[in-house]
Amino acid sequence: MANKLPRRAEKNLQIVGEQIRLARLRRDLTIAQIAERAMCSELTVIRVERGLSTVAIGIYIRVLFALGLDEDILWLAKEDEVGRSLQDLDLKPRKRASQK
Image 1 (cartoon, rainbow, N blue to C red):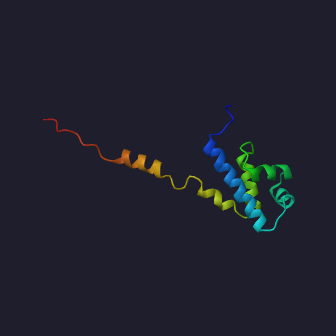
Image 2: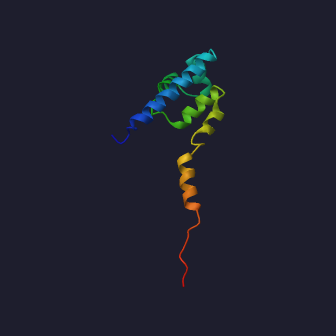
Image 3: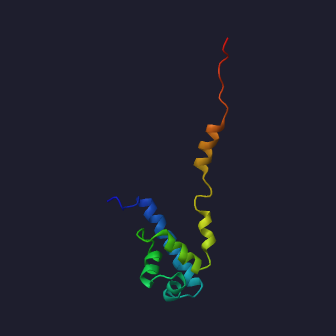
């Protein structure tokens, strides 16, 4: 059970897999061609396209590289609105009462 991702994370990974599959199809590339370029097995590419969480992130990046989409990885966690808000809250100067 410790290996299980939250349901929303599983769904997002499946969406990523589907987007990778569509990118491959738009480029008219076979699974075998991507596997060769990504230096992995065809079964691994199939698992990536299914969005399985058991595939290492490095494999996802190699498949993205094989598709010419490796720069897209830089978009992960780029817009961290919650983190920035928390940081801004911590940066506000504190007001103290005078020591009279």
